[in-house]
Amino acid sequence: MNTEEGEKKVYPPRNPVLRFLQIIYCIYALLLFIVFMFMAVVLVLLCTLLGKVRGGNAMYKVCNGWAIVWCTCIGMWHKEIYEAPVDREKQYIFVANHISYMDIPAAVLSIHQPVRILGKQEMVKYPVFGLIYRLAAISVDRTSAEGRARSVRALKAALAQHISIFIFPEGTFNETGGPLKSFYDGAFRIAIETGTPIKPMLFLDTHQRMHYRGFLELTPGIIRTVYLPDVPVNNYKMDQVKELKEKVYNIMEEGLRRYQQKY
Image (cartoon, rainbow, N blue to C red; front, side, top):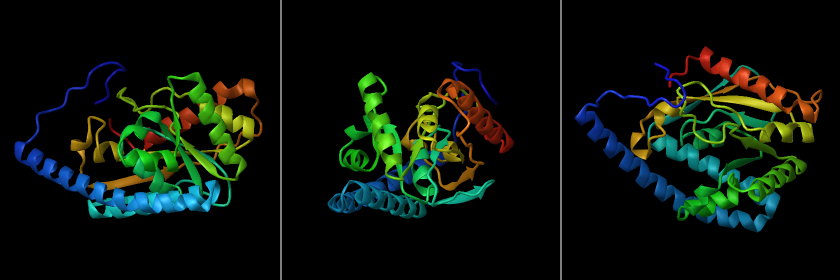
C-alpha cells in the first residue's frame, strides 16, 4: 500500500526464525563484500597507472567484475529488459530511480560502456571502500554550491572525453511511498548544455533486495533493469530544463507503475 509523502510506513512483525536466518545471510554477504573489496582496491590502484581516462575506464571494469562476483556468491542475479536498445558506441546521460543501496551495484551491472557515476560525497568517508569510491566515481557535496559546481565540471569533462555519465536525478533515497520523488535539475541542464541524450532506466527489485533501513535488510533474489527509450535533447533550450525534467519524470513514473513496482 502506498503512503502519502511524509507519512510513516508501518511494517508487519517479522518471523523471528526467518529474521535470524536473514541476519546470518547478511553477515555472510558483508564478509564477502569486505574480502572482494580488498581484492578490488589493489586492482583499482593499479588502474591509476593507466592515466585518468584509461585508468577510470579500467576501474569501472574492475567494479563491474566485483559486482558480478559478489552478487553471484550471495544469490543475486541481474536481468536486463530492453524496451529500447542501448548503443554502446553512443554517449548517454543515464538516469535511474533511487530507493536502495543496491542501486549502486545495479548501475554498475547495467551499463556496458565507459561511464562515470555521480554519487554522494559522504561515501568517501568509509575505510577502503571510500578510496575505491573516490577514485572510480564522481562525488558531489550537495550542501555546498562550490561542491556542486565542481561535480558538474567533472561530469562535463567526462562527456568531453566521450564517456557517458550516470546520475540519480532524485539525489537521495525515495522514501515517499510513491514511484519517484522530485528530480533535481542537474542532469537535465547538463544534457541540454552538452547535447547529450538521456537514457532513462528503471531499477526494479533493489528495494526488495535491500530496504533503505539498512544492510541487515539484505535478501537474495533477482535485480531487474529496464532500459527505456532515449530522450533526445537537441530541440531543447536552457529555458526548457523544467519541461525536459518533467518529460523524463513522467516516462519513468509510468514505467514503474507499469511494472507494478511496490513500495
